[in-house]
Image (cartoon, rainbow, N blue to C red; front, side):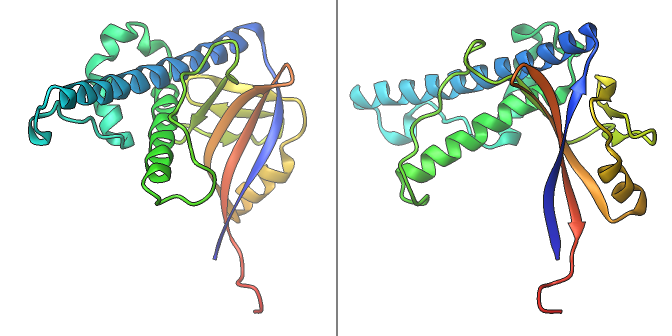
Length: 206
């Protein structure tokens, strides 16, 4: 059986590293708001067309809410929407697109009765002031350094941790777990990195 858990560490960043993280979080927020605006514009357009008596088959085609579809649409316009996009990891933009894809699916499933529990509202735009800066990495170089004091993330490079990473590092080196993702988030005035890991565990009762 596979078990999933997270290891979180506070980071001690240089000013340039912190600026880079804010830039990545901003890129995620931009992609999120762009994708949401694109989907909402099409939904509103289709609603307006229905009031004109246009048949369903002739309505403006709907943009798929899946992550691959949103990523494809983003790649077609990123040079115009974010001409500086090469300065950030592609994972930053993917963070925002993935959040929109998940939020729209939850909203749709809630409205159609596929999702139990409290009704989920339509996703909201992310504000620079009110949203929590964060970015998630699932590809590229993601590792814990052997010295137990640094981690390495795509485009951000080598970042110093505030505490030792030995608990995670030992298990990675022993091959008893593998790192699936790394999410960097600012909370309480400080940046933290949380590693999502997968490990094998024996079934209960054996």
